[in-house]
Every structure is written in structure tokens, then in C-alpha cells.
Amino acid sequence: MDTTRAIEIRPARKRDLTELLVLYRHLNRADPALEPEAAEKIWDNLLERPGVTIHVAELAGRLVGSCTLIVVPNLTRNGCPYALIENVVTHEAHRGLGIGHAVLSSAIDQAWRENCYKIMLMTGRKDEAINRFYEKAGFSRDEKTAFTLRRD
Image (cartoon, rainbow, N blue to C red; front, top):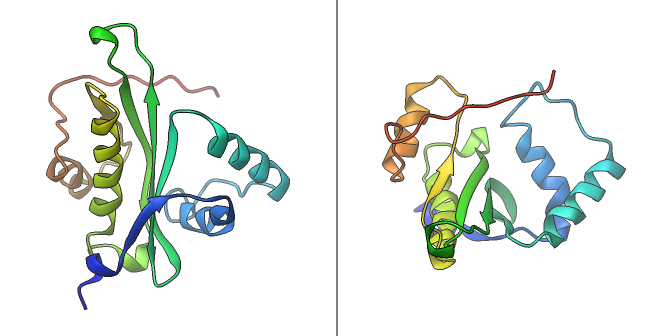
């Protein structure tokens, strides 16, 4: 079976929250689970926030991949916005089937349609295969230096 043809890529919907939270366990297993009421409040905020789209991959009625696209208005670069991609994840049982590339491509296509002049993402993963995954999608690790600041 050609899995990529059976995948539906679409923006997340309100009813996707429970499955998306299960999918996110494949991204950061050490993260504590959100309380349902807190998750629902955050979810509503995300779905209503202009410039935020959560792209999901659905296979046989189940969410198997996702990434978040944030388009940020900008006063430089002739007013062209820029985009951030975060929380790229594929369910472990479905990795290597093109799902990650399909959902990432959907987010990239949207950013270009919205006239973004650049798309940025960062990964903290040290696995070289992850870096090659992003390079295969068109990202460069040589162009910029990323810095992060975390609250303890």
C-alpha cells in the first residue's frame, strides 16, 4: 500500500485534541501530561489565534503526524511575514513512511502562500538522521545560529 496516498493532511480541528495529546507523547515522553481542563483552554486559544495553524496527518481515521506553523507579521523585509515551525512529530509506529515530510510540506506550502520571506525551525535532537530529515525538506543548518533561553 502506498501510505502517502492514504494520508490526509489538514488543519487540526477542535475534536483532535485528545489524539493530538497522545501523538505528542511520541515527541517528548518526559513531559508531564496536561490536566484536561488546562489542555482544553490552551487548545481553544491555539485554534482561535491568528497566524497559528496546526497541520495534522490522518491515516485510517487516526492522527499519525503533526507540526505547528506560526506566521508572524513583520515590519522589515518589505512587510513580509516570517514563519516558525515547531512540534514536528510522527507517531513511532508510522515513521519512515513519508508522513513527517507530508505534514512538514503542508506547513511550508502555507508559509509560502502567506508570502513569508523565511521559515525557521530548531531541533534539540542530536540524531544526525533528524538533521538530514530537515535538510531533505529544504532547511539549512549552516545559514543562521540559533540561541535559546529557558526559564528554570
